[in-house]
Length: 114
Image (cartoon, rainbow, N blue to C red; front, side, top):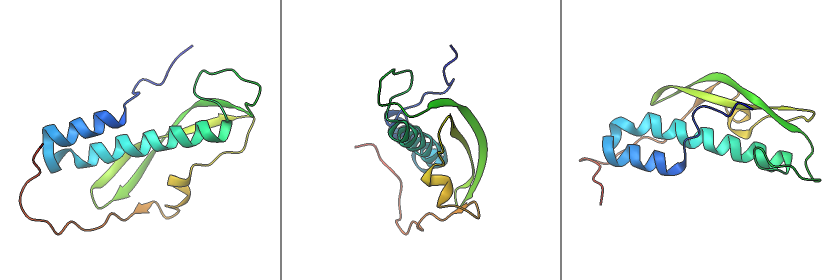
């Protein structure tokens, strides 16, 4: 059984910000969005990845690459797919024109790990 190659966590996003400051923001947002989509798929399926239970209504079926244009640049997302159920993640549904607008940052200075 092949698992998704890049199982990055929210802690990885925090580490990217601590290490790279604002230069790591695009990658950190990508990690957060990918994590949110996997969590949303698990909630839809009523089972965690690789979990077997009676409540399950379908199965995870890999990922599809999608490029999402944002103010941070184009984010390479891995959109979770399902089998035997109708699922479309809210992240992509809310970005129908594929343009996710992040609020403008008005702060001055640098990001410090503290």
